[in-house]
Image (cartoon, rainbow, N blue to C red):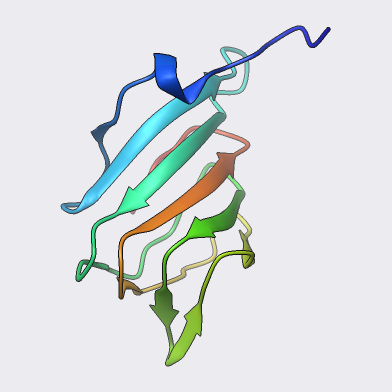
Length: 109
């Protein structure tokens, strides 16, 4: 048996760091501040270029279409942004849901 199990049906969506973004926190590591979240971008919203100074980010697109630098990514795309690396802007062509992991505190600048 796994020592930790999170069921999305038992969690709720919370406002994210940008308009049009919601997060569902599946797990938070109390030692590192890292989180595992489902992240939802509403269709038509743009997330400006940004940096996560305290965490590496991994994002796996579960559904939707996400445009960045003229390339459209869909379900099955995996992204990695090392801490301190500016990335974006991200444009949600449709509603996008991703499984996203931050290995440190989720801060945005």
